[in-house]
Image (tube, rainbow, N blue to C red; front, side, top):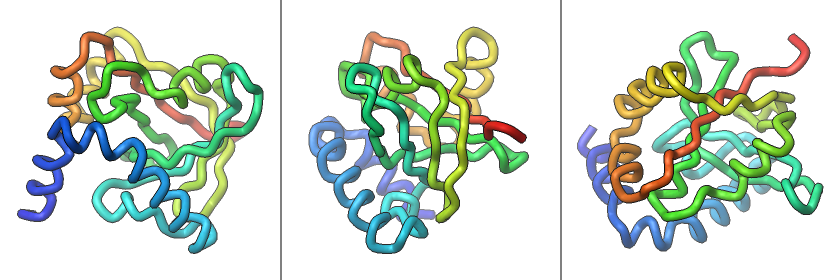
Length: 158
């Protein structure tokens, strides 16, 4: 438990916000590739997926390792566009807004999903759960003026 608190404290710092967007995804992509989709390095602390979404401008597939909050039923996932508390929205959120049909790699299984941007009361309820799940999200939100985008991913076709 003490290790989790240390990681939460470190992940809330501005230095981490500057470095993490470059280092964490690169390490995750490499480990994910080497383990054939079975392991995400960052998922040792938080559950994670590799999102494959269509680029909003390029139209090309974009793979992004992300932390997620699996919902209790086990067949939906919450993604948070916190960008580690950096000013702009992460690119993957624009991709999902433009092309909500995507795919995730979840524990080595590819799952076709549709992303839904949460708003209003639905977002507020999920945000409360997210803060209990990973308290640094509150620090990230306090650091930026933009509303952090929150998406629910639901499996397509069943």
